[in-house]
Length: 156
Image (cartoon, rainbow, N blue to C red; front, side, top):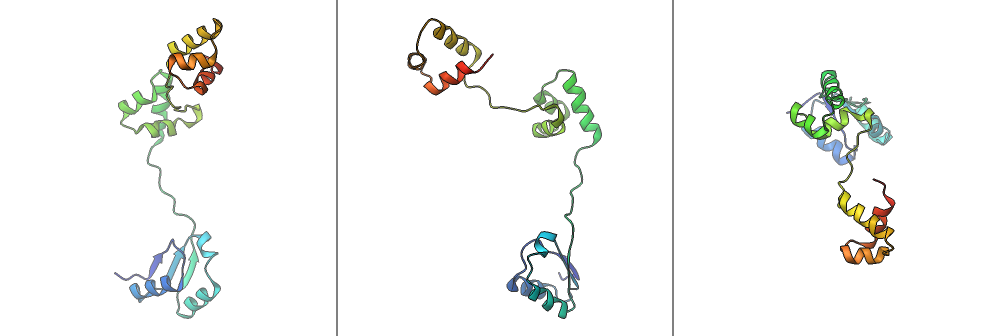
């Protein structure tokens, strides 16, 4: 399977050039990214030029968008209706990650779920108000001391 034009996205070494020439005896042009073109040795460029092979830098090939404006507005509409990203994902058959991506300007971020529920936080706050030390709370509730301090600092 020989070709006159090829695209290369790895450094052109003498070994790589020989491999390319073996596979493509009627080669006329090698295209590569600009960042790679800058790193090609001038000796290699001259040698290829002497063989009648042009080496050119080509701007990055851009992948077309997978989702349409319709998807974007649908996600926005459903969020305004109060749906969660997970519900939207199920309803529209869009991956959950895509729902977050399409809604990037609403600053919706999925954070880690809290290991401790609201009741635990309220219980810790109540114990602190009653004069129980953080270390004692940690031992009684079998929660790491660092987590007790974190939960005390956190508001909600």
